Image 1 (cartoon, one colour):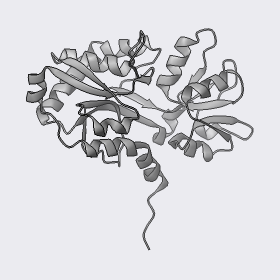
Image 2: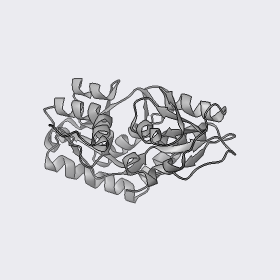
Image 3: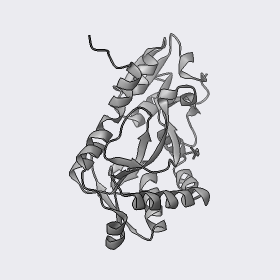
Length: 262
């Protein structure tokens, strides 16, 4: 009889499946010498996903701003290739993906991760002035908790006494929380911070519940498409400089997001 994979590994693999697929399909990376010769570093990003990235409007998104600062630090221009969804990076020729999840036990074939630059995950948010709980295990009967459909957070919430309310978008979930239609929501810190920036008179209460749930807390890095050692080292050096001089922290702050150093 074949042994079943653990739920933890199965769901972590599901979370990263699109990333792994796109990474595996991108077979021909550019080494540092070729990147420097072209004077460009290319990024795959979503054109309509603030606060992460946006093709139009006054704010380009923190992924674009960090990638642009990274390229400038390396003496290069940033080229953005817009894709929807993320796994379509397999169809275009970009050098990197931002916010690549560093997840132990899941091989990210075809991507070489940089040093991490941010702690991310999925926390809990509550309507202003409403009672909160410190972690996912404290969710109880009578609570209605918004989750993204088929997400890892939905599996974690399903183990509690709370009733799950599925959503397709985090923005919709947070609006429902603000209206009192659900008790709480499992939301990324970036989305919650950006929501509060845009709603200063009615900010949601953000709880770092992910800090008590290892499956919902991770570091993120730049994912490089099979870069050579020289390109990886150059990106790492540039990222460390941007972390040290406060550039990355300042970029996140423009979107209402707390920078948490890995």
